Length: 160
Image (cartoon, rainbow, N blue to C red; front, top):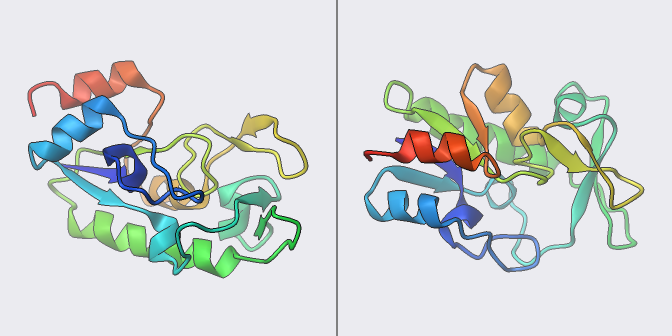
């Protein structure tokens, strides 16, 4: 069983109302091997919603209270509580699947699900760091794989 970012199975839950459909993950979803989650929706945010970025180091800094998640639509609305709530709700799903959960495959570059890269707050440049949900799942010992790590995804999903 795999926990995956819902946008990767083609669900339109991205901030802009779109998705990031990933062919291999959709195939596993059709075979019943995937549980899709969208931490931002689980945190109470609507779709579509204003884009947001982490102000601070990364998701770990948000979890420790040193960082915030703010919208970058001009309003700078603080959505930190939504991102934290969504991360903890995602953790509940992962813990429910414990024992059957092989890995979490999460959408790279997302302020919730980014595994290795997220966007800088003040620019469109990428920086090293995890999103809020990824950081929490990793902290709790779950195996996290980037949606961009095609080689690992192919190996894991082979035979499911």
